[in-house]
Structures are given as C-alpha cells and as structure tokens.
Length: 313
Image 1 (cartoon, rainbow, N blue to C red):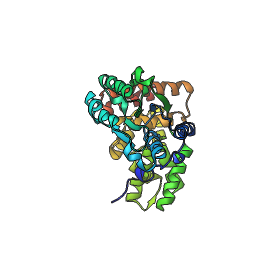
Image 2 (image 1 turned 90 degrees about the vertical axis):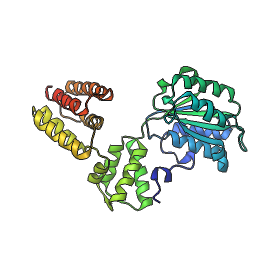
Image 3 (image 1 turned 180 degrees about the horizontal axis):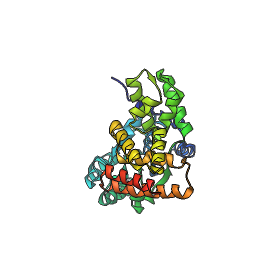
Image 4 (image 1 turned 180 degrees about the vertical axis):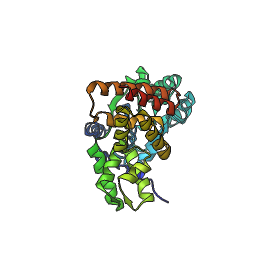
C-alpha cells in the first residue's frame, strides 16, 4: 500500500512544525506548564492547523495521546446532533493518565448557529476535564461567545522558502529526481498550502521518474505563469478573440474551472507591464467575476466576460 505523504511526513512534535514559530512557542509553553486553554486555530487550508493540534497532543500526552485526543470534522455533520452526541460523549469520559482531554473540531465554521450554541454550553460544562481546539478558515463565522472563551491563533500561508525547503526534504527522503524548475513550479501552484504541495509532488512522483516544471503544472491542472501572461498581454493588445480561444483551449485541455483561471491571473497581474490604474481595474474585475462564479454563474461565460473587460481597458 502506498502511504499518503501528507500523513507520512506529518511532524511528530511541535519542534518539527514548519513555520509559525511564534505560534509554536506559545503552544510549547502550554505543554511545559501542562495548562492548555480552549483554543481557536484560524487560517487558510494547508497551513498547519491540524498538524499543530496533533503535535501538541503528542507532546502533551506522549504514548497516550490517541486516548486523550479526538478529531471531528464539522463539515461531515454540521448539525446540533454532532455536539449533543459525539462531542459530548467524548467530553464526559475520564482522561487517561492526564488532567484533561482534547477535542479537535476541524472546519468548525461549518457548524450551524444552533450547534455552536450547544458547543458553547458543552465547553462550559466540561471545561475542568476537556479542552477544545476549534479549527476554521474564517473566524468571523464563529459566534462571539465561543471566540471569547478561546485563545486565538491565526495561521498565515507559509512562505515560498518554507514550502521549497519542505519539498526538498521530501525529495531527498523519497530519492526523487526533481529539477529546480519543478520545485519552483510546486511552490507556485501550492500558493503557501503545504498539503497541496505535498499531494502534487506525490502525484507527480507516482507517474513520472523525473519531475520537471511541465509535469508539475500538468498534475496540478494549473496554468503556467508564462501561459497566463501571454493570454493577458494578447487581450490587452486588443486581440480578444485570440486570447479567448487560447484560454478556452487550455481550460479544456487541463480541466480548469473559472476559479482556477482567476487565481492564475491574480498571480500574474502585478508583473504586467501596464499602469497601476489598469492593474487596479483588473483586480477589481477579478473580485466581481469570482463572486459571480461562486454564486452560480457559468464559469465559461464569466471568464470570457472578464477577458472582455481586460481587453477593453
């Protein structure tokens, strides 16, 4: 059985967590004092929220960490029953060789308002024997009574250098033949998401003995920076139909959706040789069309409309 690299290379200790040294230092102080408060980990996907929670439990409980730590994904069952049954049942059981247990609630911003109110009451009732770590992408979706009970940790996207060093470590461990351009491509498509970088690298290694830039972009189903820039420059040079045809062919060939294209344009727009006013206009349009796609608009129509707006600058 092929082991998933995101699990295989998950840190065994807080000392091994990549980046976020200020957060890690605070968590380690909790471990050394054996005094963990309720906490909320907020930030984008793939930045180490779940990893940090598990590493904290391993440092705190040692070999007994699996008996005193449970992980629940709120997006699987976001209603009040998951709080009343699954979470409360674990919270009321006695910890093993420890003063308290830890419940890690992933994607807690998916919980309904009623479920969050029930969670607040559970946090109050079992605070002496159980601690909660709530992980979310958007802390604003967590009700204020829960936020006020938690120490808040905000995880930012990892830097390019941190992702690059991690990819090199995996490549050395797995004896991968990957070019420097391939590593740079993996850093680009991951956009600070370590989980995405690891998964793309494993997918590329599974199908190719030698990994280069082209393979990474192909596996990630992503547009290469040069391709995006060429399309944008074509549109800006009043060649809308050529830009539309080129982008349409790439979307079909790579299986891209509208949001993938908008993210790729966003990465390149700042480096275009155009005025600041035009860059601001393009960014404004990207926000508008991303919203339309998220709200259910046709990706093909919206992307063509975005290109038309760019060509009309």
